[in-house]
Length: 134
Length: 403
Image (cartoon, chains in turn brown, purple):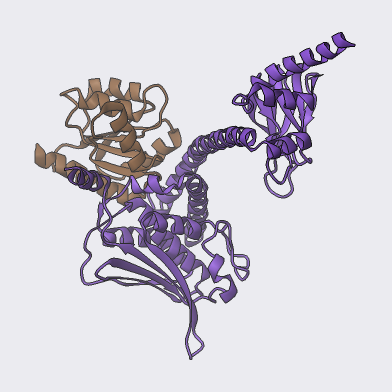
């Protein structure tokens, strides 16, 4: 097995963070958390994760802002993003398109709350896809 | 004597001028305004005074000259709470309160309270009505303005409600999502082993929380479910996939009553155009509805087949059925059949499903089943046209038509 994959989880709700950690920590991943978009970007500067689990509605910098920044920065452009939010998918895609004129480049989208087994499956799949890409 | 007369005429013409500045009389000729001025008086109200009261007979129309009125509506949440007044808007100089003098049933639809000392012109409702009836030209102009005014207030109210609901829904949903996330984590054994008793309590908690989340979603949906909004989301999708997701949505509720969801799919699912998320809502609503009324340990049948023009989905239960005389009403908002007893729900699921199907130019129908063996049940049939177009396809076809 290769090196442990690192996953950064970004959500302003500490209970969601704890719940997601509890699920993912049963798997062989290294996990880290951030409470808003600014903190998330700071942590990305220090270490680029293999996967980002991202909430959308957050204070300071929201998830759409994080996607925008990441997709315009070559170092982060290839980090797969899994959106985990209460916002329905079509509404948030429309909002992103209206604001940026681009389609929202995220690899998976889950409406809260996540089902643990389902979440693990999705994370596995995304990490495998990234590893295959190199 | 002559000077008295001219003084009176002068006062009338000042009043007429002031009336002419108000939003509903602005199109009228000076002659018309002079007549209306004859049955109008001016008055100043103190801060906090009620100018008119919701529900009372509308006898007078008020034109604000100076100051500000708050329009308030009595709102009662639940049957037992004390009603409160909610401010739905403010009106200032030139605006009117009490348009109900011109619209049946001539009952004020809001109260109007002075926010500051406020000077108003009071127009007598009976006289105004008589005048407008005998002068249809003026009547048309005034009613036109009233229609625009009411339309504006209605749009305002709808927008406020939609905005308010979307905020409320997020604020309510976020904590519930956190709770459900913890519960599912525990239920999945990710926070340690559970005893059977604990597992059962957590399962019940998940069910109650998901019910509540769905209910919040329904309340918000009802407010924003306009056909063009649903049609904007039209896309190609695999109805088989959406059906599976709905079965997954309803799985816990079914397990709870030991109900088996028997699936009878067509040999192949072909993609169709529609609002994917909305269709999932329709199927999930129908499945949950069937599970709610099916007896424990029974089968709920979920079947689908293709016809040349439509694809058809059916959800059938073996519950008590719906009283025949109530069948025509079950798709109405907040309708609940008389035999639902203590089963949870507020009667929104089916009306939402109906709205979604209407936006798809499809149909949703219901029939009771009763066999000679004494079996009963209800069967809901949904048919979705196979020739719907995505927004992109619509654009393309218009462009072609243009050429």
